[in-house]
Length: 444
Image 1 (cartoon, rainbow, N blue to C red):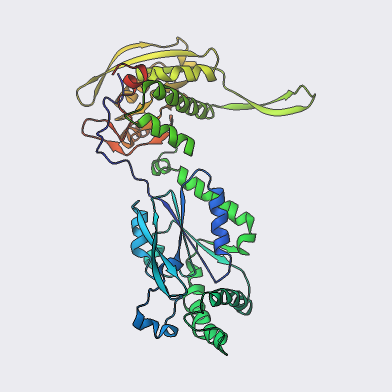
Image 2 (image 1 turned 180 degrees about the vertical axis):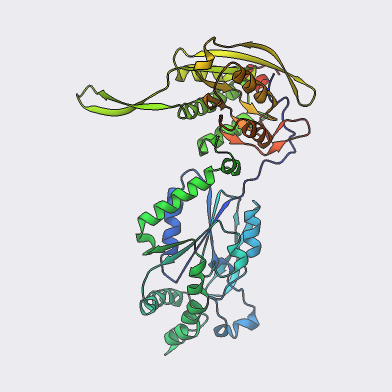
């Protein structure tokens, strides 16, 4: 009997996974944008959006424009509303800003929910409410004295001069450069930017020239994105690293309009990936061999006494992938029938006679409530299989099933490709993929 019995309601919203929010601050021309672009260029499998603080500068009325030189455009702005919506996975419209007219433009940019949101600007670490939304806070520090920072600021001011002045002051007027530095740039740096450095989780010296720091940051982001919260609770739970390929295949097999042929094709691809990941958890020993060139290669050999056990019927869909990876592997069968809402009855079992001496791959593509899995694992233990020798392979798992299995069998490993949101009132995985066995074998 399958772990999941029906397609999820079409109106049910997909599970929401909060984006990883990064704040990148630092002085003017410190290399913030370069650091952001370097991070983005290495995030190959994630959706990344860059939000610039400059988009949220004050938009001045005609009356205020008459005294434009009185306004400090480097003063912290309220990004809170926009960032809160992005954090909740909602689409937002980010205004454009014309530095020449000192007004927001009508050409707003729509930003969709993403895996990673990078907020870049000189003051993004100043407001504690915005900081609280961040998963990582970075301060780009050039390590230069303020006198050199002024040179950087001077370059910035010259650029703004081409747009019509800096803070509304025509830079061709004598003494304007000194006024800008003393009235706006340096006070803002001292009051808002430099003190925010203490809130940073990571300080990057030399900005974009620090390749080592960028690589370490990207590795940390990849780790956090690939680690489900339940993996932090259960050391025996493993979720294969998500990529656009994996997400694309999940999109196809979950779609109610996908044909049986396509469902089987992409389900087989995902199953093969889960099986190969599961094989990586087998014990191994080092071995030296000689290559055809006469060279010595130090490799590994894995434990050879393996078998698979499929929970009929959906689990049988995973047998071909296991056979393709493990030539001649023995495969047993377990049939479990549901009794009411939570009961399970063992109907049939046929297992290798020497299963107690083997490592066992338990096969079931969907882990829902965990009742069938608990019944199957209990049977394996009664046959003498060591709990630590069981690796449970599936495509999707619900949190309820993970809790039920991992709490009861902490030494057994679970390998899955995605953790779904929850179960509905009928114990169906949400958003799920429907009745897996019927869709795979064409019996719906």
